Length: 278
Image 1 (tube, rainbow, N blue to C red):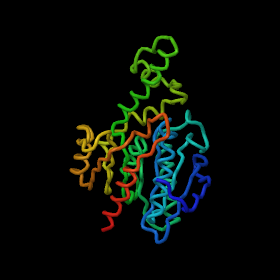
Image 2 (cartoon, helix red, strand yellow; image 1 turned 180 degrees about the vertical axis):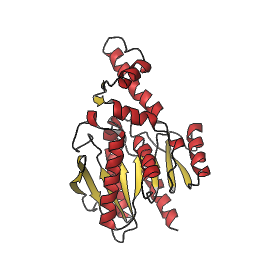
Image 3 (cartoon, rainbow, N blue to C red; image 1 turned 90 degrees about the vertical axis):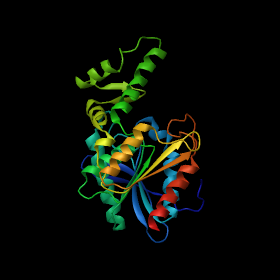
């Protein structure tokens, strides 16, 4: 979904109390209809999703939405090392990104998050002094503990592939983190503070306090949300949030070894915003 002729993004470093954060800003075309901050996923999923994030930002900008693509602490071209990042620090980065685009466009911003970025967006929405205008959640991770276990298993798999024995399972790795030890996993240094924040994040226990559009990418058309995801969405509705769920058929671009696009996800996202403005 290329958009020839669209103005290039404005690249800059955003000064925050925790250091400089690299940003790409896509200005809205024509009259501004909204503002969004994109929150990227975790570790290698971020790199594999860069093209889709760029395509999404350009498509949204063409429809009148200002979009800020923000590299969190230790990620992409932002200052700091991944091994020094923390969950709370990433939440502060999101707050700083929101403040910048809200001052620029003069309106409350929403958040668009992918995978763990969606979980971060939900956590921000619960604690922010002013809730975001909306949440657009792409394939959200709903349970940080389960995601952390999956990430730790990459370390175990790497040890086996290297011809050695694994470290004794995820519980042993968790014990090392709890003791203050950082772990090298798939080329990323995971520190205990970041691991603890991710481990404690549970979407079902968080109240977003704003309208939510949930986009689930499935391999086959018509497949429903997984039961765990249904429980989260139902819990949010009981808490008073409007939750619209959209399932789209397409590839899991955030894990694909090669760069792949998911046009159906972009189309569903734009359609969702059009419906909200009717």
